[in-house]
Length: 367
Image (cartoon, rainbow, N blue to C red; front, side):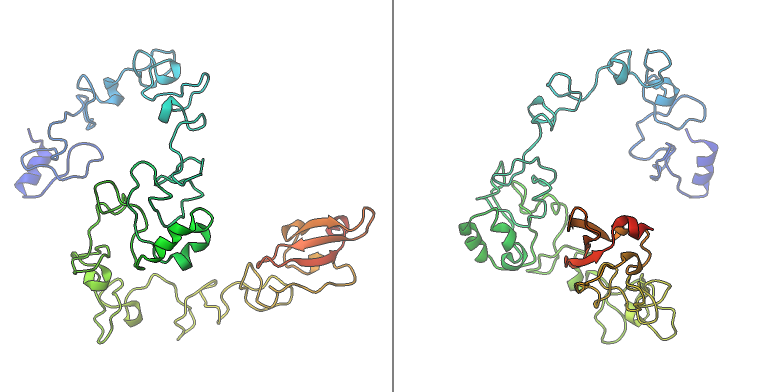
């Protein structure tokens, strides 16, 4: 039966949403519920639009029994008590005595031997995603000779073994497998193994290919990839760039998500202070009295090179800007002498170059 609100909407030929809480689907014509909730009951409490759980009541209004333990309002599970007070848990627990973690394989938790192992031959770590551990998660090729576990019989082509993963693969596979991969034609294909009985991996199994013959790119829109017209092209004459936020590309007036320099006539991307690097934006070098822009780890290109050794001790607090503590930029590597007045420090170099200086002792520098 329709209420007054839905009757008025029907009279004005307007659609209404489902009556259940947090359901934004359109109600079925002639009903107050959507197609998903049309056979589900509402809570019998007045003005409550939650779904009934039991005895025509939702969980909040008593549809689910409370724990029988004193002052506990948690719902009971598998008896009169909740899980915390002795109720049955739906999860299988580890079979090791005294372990309350959830069991996976062999009725044991991951710590006690449950769970899957990494599919890389010789690796004893546990699998985290796609059958490999975190250490081998970036491995971009798979083959039946080295990754054969369970149903991994087929492989996807490698993009370019020589330039992408050759250095890493030499540590985990033999040379025979690498020679076989060199014979594969380089192409921009997915590097994950297909699922059993399918020609797609788990990530692409519900994604379509471009409708253009011989194109294996993923569909972007209208059955086409970006290269073959899936994304609109700029309407400016003789421009083949993709549109951005309208009918034009960013170069010809389309909306661009980047911020540009506030200096009039400058079209470069803004860094700090809403200015580009040429007009004052960006970070300065950390070295005192250096006005060049920082390139690597806060230093300009001139100060990225190793410093020369100085014969006399140097107070590092006057070399590096804003250094209240010397260990913020340097770390001791060795004592020159037990009773020496100087220490040898190594500054954390942006290019792994060791800046070696004869510095004052910590107590003198801090003063």
